[in-house]
Amino acid sequence: MGVIETVFLVISSCILCSVSLGISNAAPTSTYNVVNFGAKADGKTDCTKPFIKAWQSACTSLSPATIYVPKGRYLLGNTNFRGPCKRKVTFLIAGTLVAPEDYKALGNSGFWILFNHVENVVISGGKLDAKGAAFWNCRRSGKNCPVGARLCSMTFNWVNNLVVSGITSVNSQLSHLVINPCNNVLVKNVKLIAPDQSPNTDGIHVERSTGVTINGCTMQTGDDCISIGDATYNLFMSNIKCGPGHGVSIGSLGKEMEEKGVENVTLTNAIFSGSDNGVRIKTWARPSNGFVRNVRFQNIIMDKVENPIIIDQNYCPNNQGCPGQISGIKISQITYSNIKGSSATSEAVTFDCSPSNPCQGIKLQDINLNYNNRAATPSFGAGAPDAISSDPRFLSFEFSWVFPPYLDLYLPSQASKAQLSERVLKEIPEELKKNLDHVCSSIQGVWRSAPGGAPSTRTPTSMAVFLYYVEDEAGPRVERSALALQRFWRLAPELSAWRQIPCSGRKTWELTEALSPWALRRW
Image (cartoon, rainbow, N blue to C red; front, top):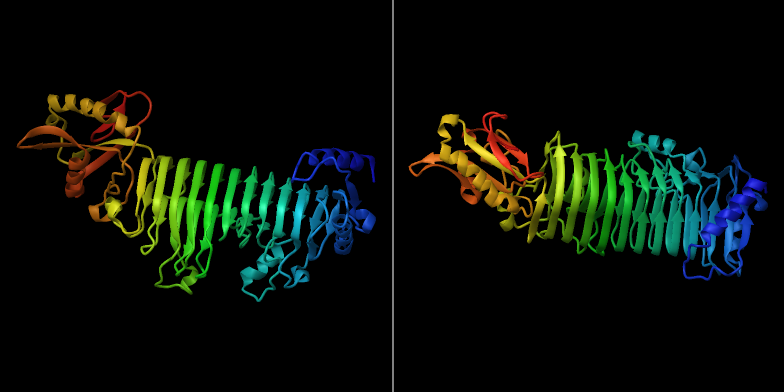
């Protein structure tokens, strides 16, 4: 072992001794260098057996043990690190673990690197290169490809008290990391990278696990950055960077009738860049007794994300196995809070809930998403958006700052400046003063027609207060709230324009001709 490698080992071991999994750090540590078991760092020699021998020695050690992988490239075939072990085992990786160039060498084993039935494990540092390109090409061609590493580059089955830290995984055949079923897991500071067109290369997949924390991870994948399967409880994700990829997805769930639920999931402090989805809940349109409840997505930035917020309970790929059926998954107590940025599509929020198992307790708080520098709109499937409270797909739904709050002034096409009497001009600021606090604090979900569209084509968005100029036998005036909204629907085809002004900054407003025909503009 060289001097540099020795120093790296000593420093890394000292750092790792601060990671506690309930075992005393005072115990002496045995170190097993894979090179001493015959591994060669040339990327060509099969190192599977030397790695297994090093594992067996560490696993049977009566003191906490470290398996050290020096710098270099180590070729591994199917490798099963199986427990139980007597004491804590740390894998300290300074090199790169590479899969065979020929994906057929992994056959139908279902895994590449597997940790199985073991407790108190730390995997730290290093790089995984699964050589996935040839396997992706086989799948794209439609040929009968072997299963390959169908679970992922690194799989954890029945592993408790696990720490995965500082790993970089590239070109996984399918998923990068799979956690199933495990308890008390920390995944931190990992980078998971595959081309955006690589099929099913999920970053981290979690299912049938409890107490998983994912922190400080960067994922650029061809599928979900993080996917969450059934029987997942108490999952906490923070400081996540995702994109390209398909976002953070709960599901797909409900493919089978007998499924357990997903509960107590939090994603906070995340950035999505150019991903197909942001935060998604996806269920099959099939009968199921599963559920999703108590989920919070908060403090998130979206950068040109196609579907920033989406619930899809009509998932049925290729219309096979579920046409005409309805999802049985029950979704409840889902909160979206402080989500800002840009959507790559005009509909930034899509809620397509099950009509037989309506969504309950959906809350959106402080949502500020734009499309082409305008407020993006939400979509609620086939239900009438202005009747959300009576829509059978929603038992309870709450808006609070859903998209940027606006004050809107609607004018009939025949309106002219002369029709705006001096009294009306004075009334408009007064109306604004009356409603401004309401506008800037709590929006109750008012709806508008799409620009230029008739009421039959309306799509929902959140407008806090409608101000509508009208002249009739009662004289000229400005109407607001429900009455203005009713009049707007009735006269929508006659409206020549509408204008939206963000509710922010100084609370002083004026009427101006800066936008034709009329608009309210901040002073």
